[in-house]
Image 1: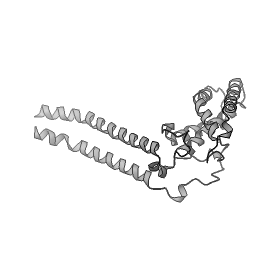
Image 2: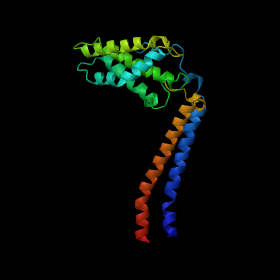
Image 3: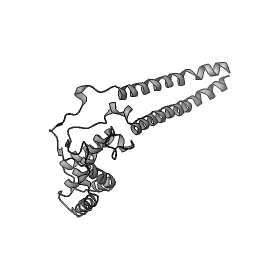
Image 4: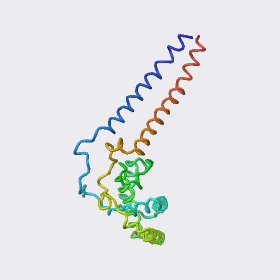
Amino acid sequence: MPGRHRASRPFPVRLCACACAGLLALFLAVLLPPPASAHRSAAGRTDGLPIPTLTHGQMAVIAENRPEILALADRQPFPDMTFWRLRNYVGLQYAACLWGLVPGSIADEASPFNECSHAYLSGVRALLLHMKTMPGDTAAAAALVDRINLEMLEKNASLVVCRFSEEPFNTAEIVGPHWSEIPFHGPSLLAMLGLAAAFAGGLAMFSRFLRGPHAEAAVVAG
């Protein structure tokens, strides 16, 4: 019995140590501000496709219609290069903003994830407007544009602004969250702690799964 415990213990201990080191690195990356060169400049890059910005209110309307816009994009029969550049930007920018999973990313101007949310949702609207101009049947895209514009008018979306409402974006630049601000924003901090806890729990379950065959082998050998 003692031999079995000694044989099965080192692997999970090493795994937990690696997990703790990884979590420590994650929180150091969050707590320490990035170097000055990592901050986005006011103008940003201009060597890609320019993407007009959205006001805070317009962003909320686009967020509500994002699944329908992307579903329409996936059905386009004749995508051109501009379409693919915009679609690729939207996907990369959405992932860089942690797939919109952090609470308050869109509604809360103070969220460290608000700027990157502006970026991917501005890309979604640019993609929709481009689909309206593509060759072929554009009736569905035009109808969706008209409906979204009506929603924005009904909600006075253009009047609801924030600090990122006048910030243009570009497909050549992926905008990330403001990592150094996370410790000072409660919902974002709780979300990151939850992510860390889920990651640690997954590693624990994985270690138990891998440890099972070793434990059984030790019992048979004993």
